[in-house]
Image 1 (cartoon, rainbow, N blue to C red):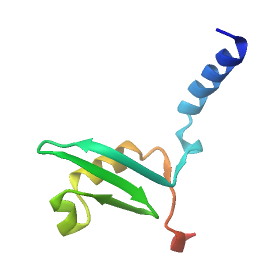
Image 2: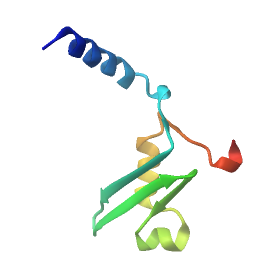
Image 3: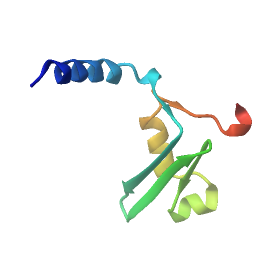
Length: 82
């Protein structure tokens, strides 16, 4: 492995230990739930999910789980919050 690649690997490890460097503007994931797979997205400061519970209440276990998982990283504020 060349020295350039080694330094990039070392830098990536340092970045991974500093999640405050990351600001998430948009994300789209496939979430494997207990009953089905759902697409969960984050854009313009709002979470969205395809599951029925989210459609009824605008929050669900899938969006809450991702919020907990990504808590160390900054989610971009909605444009009206800037």
